[in-house]
Amino acid sequence: MAENSRPEDTLQEISPRETMRGLPGFVQPYLTWITGVPLEGGKQLIPWSPAKAGLLGLVQMAAGISVGAWALHPFRAWTLPVLVLCWLFTSGGMRRLDVVVVHQTLHRMFTKSARGDRIVGELITTFFWRMPYDDNRKEHLAHHAFPCSMKDGDTHYLLSTGMRPGMTRSEFRRYLWRTLFSPKHHARFFFGRVKNNFFGVAPRYRLFMSIGYLAATVAFITLTGWWMEWLVLWLVPMSVFFQSCTYLYTMTEHRWWLFGNQERLSRDKRDLLTFGRFCGEAVPDASLTGGRKAAAWSSWTFRMLFVHSSYRMFVLVGDTVQHDLHHVMPACDWANSPWIRADDVGNRPERYTEVWGSLADHLRAAGQVDNTMTGLPGDVVPTEWSRSASQVAAATASSAPSGAESTGQ
Image 1 (cartoon, rainbow, N blue to C red):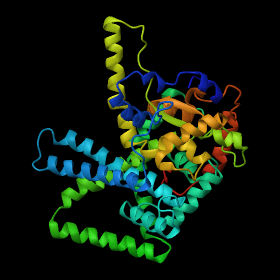
Image 2 (tube, rainbow, N blue to C red):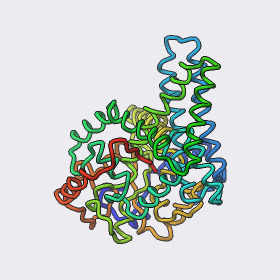
Image 3 (cartoon, rainbow, N blue to C red):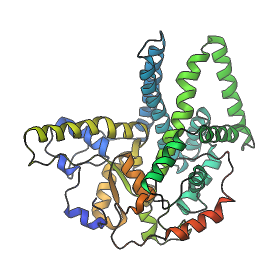
């Protein structure tokens, strides 16, 4: 979407996805997946279901672990770069199970049964040492009731990392890299997860699940002697890589500082806090010729295959591209959200905004870095930075404890 354009104006513009209409038919399903947007009037080839979405996460995670195990024995010159790729694949699969499956169990939209959703949610969060179901659900429903406010746990998490409104691009870049590679950040995040599973855990059965899982893990690796394999193929992606992806995802989830972390907002303002995080860019201009055309298409192909695909595979997984749809219609057919959102945008475009591009574009838009207004209607008046900063400063003293973790949902 062009800067400062209104959502309804986009219906009269050619979106980046529509510029891809002329590409071969066999690549269109891939382009729908990577962008998160189907062609207008396009047909859905594979109807998705919650079970298929969960299975895809398991397959991705298993593939990362399996290839990593193959690359590890014996250790070769190219093992390390393959392991890095496997860590990303494994953590991406874990993220699918966490931010897609567990997230929907919190809304009781995975099995459509309160008991079934609890069982699925408790099992997955136990395996990944994530927040137990009841606390997770309570915190997530508060996020929906008071998004981006000081009652939202993810707001506190981002504040604890040093994120603030009004950053320049250079300030934000330094903050981003410092946090991604901060041992303190990862240690706080990880031990917050451990604490949530072993200290003050309720209900009691969940504590027994955590202890039983830990005991089974120790027994398994003691009997097999696979200590190194467990550390390399499970703990590394489950900690550093999982947490890095969660951090990046959470930062792009909302326009956190748009209205000064206010608790009470009108529906119109609440809608503006969330946007469609669409990946990709328009195809090169048809007027290009010769070497310029070849260079432009080479650059576009590279970015689609590696930059945008990596973002979709490891960070912006599953239906999270259409996170604005989730806040507008939490009870929708989320497994088929690209088509559901497309239909709803046609019916009520005023409720949706979108930002096209890469992870970097979404980070800048969500953090309003350099006062960016990308994807926002031209008449939106953000809360002044000074007012936001005063609220942030007042809340910092009572922010989440140092062991807090982001739900990333």
